[in-house]
Amino acid sequence: SSGLAPWQVHRVIDMMAGLMAVSDGAHVSLPAMASVVGLSTYHFCRAFKQSTGPPPHRCQNRLRLERAKTFLTTSRLSIIELALSLGFDSRQGLAWLFQRVLGMNTSEWPRQRTL
Image (tube, rainbow, N blue to C red):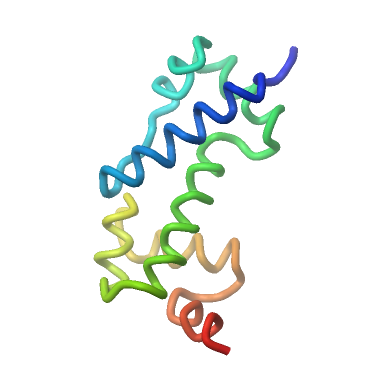
């Protein structure tokens, strides 16, 4: 089986980023992602992973992480407010993702940026 066409990958990522920008905590569901490129959910998930490497939820988490990094250096939101605005159930979800991907906690990020 083949992966997604480049336009399909871009459309899904634009959809994720666009919804995240206009709706705090919004997640794009797998059926919605699949629908926007005209595939079944099952085929979409396989093709997305084949085309991009990570599965759709990991890509969505990376976008959330990038947004969190920006907010941590530019806003006065508390960690819990930031986590909830990005769709995490608690600050621990954001902290876990930060630690797993970046190898640091959320309080270390702004200090890293000023060194």
